[in-house]
Length: 328
Image 1 (cartoon, rainbow, N blue to C red):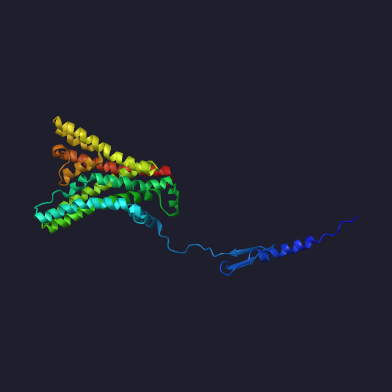
Image 2: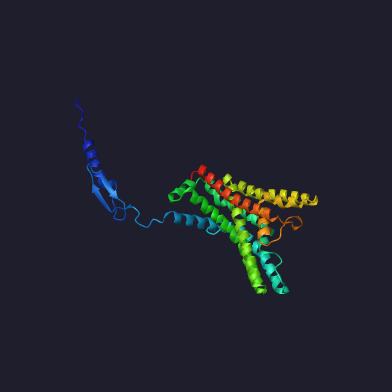
């Protein structure tokens, strides 16, 4: 028996030939041009083209990273709850200055109750809380979510990233510590205190808070960059700032009780805030917070200054080393 002739092949062939015409209909919105190729295939031009605009370069990328990090330190551009703590701490920093100004104006005082260069030392706890809350969010999130390699989408290098983060954290601390000094200065002028003396005091205070901001920013970022866990970073920053200060203060009091005042001046080299205290009391017209207001000698003051600068430079170098391992 001979097989029956099949009729399905022509239908299949017909459907195969008609498939290119019906399977991918082109619309004028998505297809700008199409050219036929052998075999019935089509190449569609969907409008991709190279970038012809200006190339803004590394400087623009650095500025953008600095601005974003600085704004983030006060919760700007973030959720509402992210603004609460930094703004609250900023208000706490400025409130004592406003009260001092009000008292000076009402009582017609001849001087401010605290010197400009010593104001930040009095409120070191607030500064420490601010640093502990903001330094980890500045660097640990990039480490935790492994987003650091994405920065290569902009023309920046490791040094650009580290410099921008360091400058942003120092700038945020400078705003926190410098704003109360401006409040004090404005109040002193309203109280008609001597203009020259107050201007000199303000300049000395600004030098002190610049050093403090650079020192604390370096320490906070180095500690925070060790771990991608923000909670661990917060606890570590608080520990690094408070434990040495407590130990130094205790040993200073013991040394003073035993009559070793010279030792008291040198012990301040082992804590971040006492480093700044030693510099401001020696060179910037402030009084020391050491027992019985013992001040370091001039020679010791130079050592304080050199150690402070060395710690700042060392923190920057450690950050560069840390991010070399992290992929930048």
